[in-house]
Amino acid sequence: MALGEVSVAKYATVRKADTTLVCPKCGKKPSWHGGYECECGETYGHWSKLKRIVTATHEVVEKPKLTVKGEVVQAEVFIMRAEEFAGKYADATLDEHGLTASDPTTAKNIQKLLIAVERLGMVVIVKFNDTYETRICLLAVSMSNRVVLREIIPINLAKITETLRVEMEDVTEADIAEASQLIKMLKEADEETLMVSDYRIKGLAEQPIETPKVQDFRTILAKVQS
Image (cartoon, rainbow, N blue to C red; front, side, top):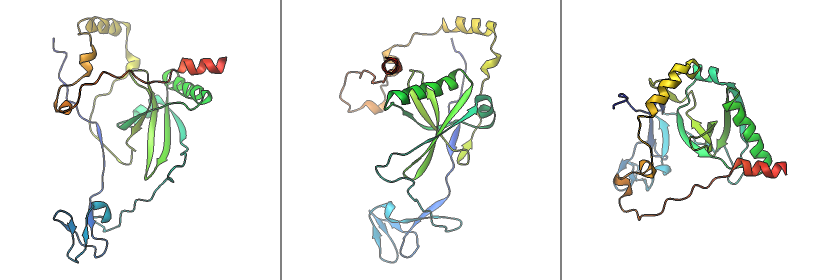
């Protein structure tokens, strides 16, 4: 049975300025001949040796470091009502990062924040500097119950496209009953469901599926209570 037809697309992309790589000595755009060669006679083996400028204004694009190598970066944590966040902002992700707790107190505080997300209708926003860029993430629980930081595209960098959104607060008992009937008609997933056989596995030696490595909240919090 076909359940329907959908289009799948990333619902937001990162806006990027139109920039050009130029010779840092003369300011002209070099040509590529196994390396970057400029009219002034300079050659460069890698694009990072060139200067990046905004094409329209010729403003130099600097990339200052926001962190010092080896330092422990402190993140700021913010909170917002989920309905306000959903009504105004997009949470299109750049990436997702797993978390581990360095001590029981940290684990307990993360649990409190997750309770605010899951039970109190809050969005927990974590913001920190990472080398050259500022990361903005949402604290969440994945489908496999992992604690994750979902890095979102900053709203002043996001180019949003149209996607479907649903409000689950309006779900009725009849809707739940219909959903229960629908899932009874679907196939059960197994390990093969989560594997691919496309070009990406070519040349890879077969390896056993690794057991997930996780920190368990209950184990950590049991130590605190004892």
